[in-house]
Image 1 (cartoon, rainbow, N blue to C red):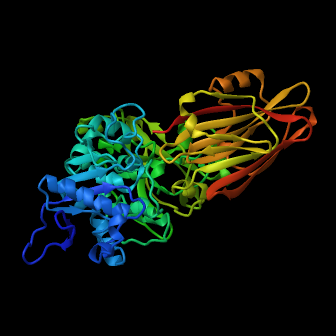
Image 2: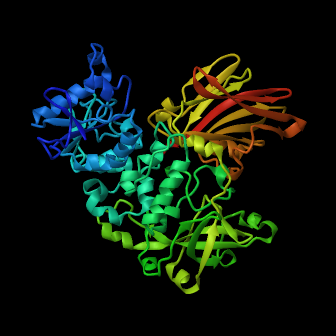
Length: 567
């Protein structure tokens, strides 16, 4: 292990002959930025080194640590030889241990001033990008003592003193923040995945690699494997654990609701609704069976119910393709009422067992309705379910939009072409106007959706007038975190308009969203609305160029925004 000497700023290696034990050290948690310094630059410094912003972090963190008597600091940018793949793999597999074993962790928040009240609503602390990164999850949880520092390297507070604020930001229970090593057995795999569900990494593979320590998994790094890294992570977990909450996920994007899936999730984002899913005590008493991946699919034994005996999601009948049977497979997990309970023993008081829908196709099963899990009475399950050993395929539809949503990307700009001028803008949340900066011109206007710090869900409706007498239609841009899709409402009546402006408009089937990039819609009076969305870029940003037109009289009347910040 390499450490930086806080007095000399030289890199030293441990253990060594004269110091066989690793000395006490401070560890730095931070977001990587411009001009980070490498191990090679620290070992063979040049005159330009001291002018780098990354070097300033080394100097400042060392100075703070030295002021409290620490001789050494560990910083990931320059204490790992990233040109050595074997060392990089070992370091990433050991990262949780590095943070756990540190005497103190300094969390440097470059985007937060130290003078503000971190607990205030809308504070820069609450909105810091540090809380959105995948790697900083284990850096928050692993160390017993963590001190937050602002952009000027003045103390903001500690993980302990700001516990209520940190819990509110991260939705991680206090017991996990206080002593994860002692209490981790009380938290299910689904809950741990949920803690990462709103976080992002620069590389898709890192969304799996950053969770290895938290989940107690070791595996080789294969950059370039994409989302397969998260699949490998889950398979490693199945080798070590019988916690079936790993299968308790739901798709987040409406267009994936009718896809056929396997038992494994694509990414942590699919566990966003799993904060209150815990292992079931009742099902832990059942005989355990082996779960293994085969060339047919995942082999597993689960209690089965026939779906016709229980209510299924709306539209389930459409899944009875060619007479295939639908079953409900019961997972060994259930719902806990108090997600953030400080008493981990309350985990056992569940409200029901979770089941997922499986469809049989020539003896091999696939998961259908992956946007939904059924909550069932435990007693009913115990009395009526029958154990079956089945193969569940992992060859599934591949929703490219979902893969893209798991990767951070530039804000997407939607450019609507036509000579249209909105008369009014209604918003149910005027305080969030920074989400959508508008630029209006004679030829087009632009919506910029998504921000670096926050994610939103809801819609922006473009309300058009056409024809005589005046009729209304609307084009919706639906926002789901950092993804989006479109829908068109051909006929907007007076009641629809009133509900739209009041933020209560819910007409339309969300499962039909995002299915088109070209469409023509019949309007009143024989007119036709033409819609086209084309992918492109503006100044390096992802952009969709939207054309909306109608033959004859047609203009944009209003823009209505209805959205909320996602947790």
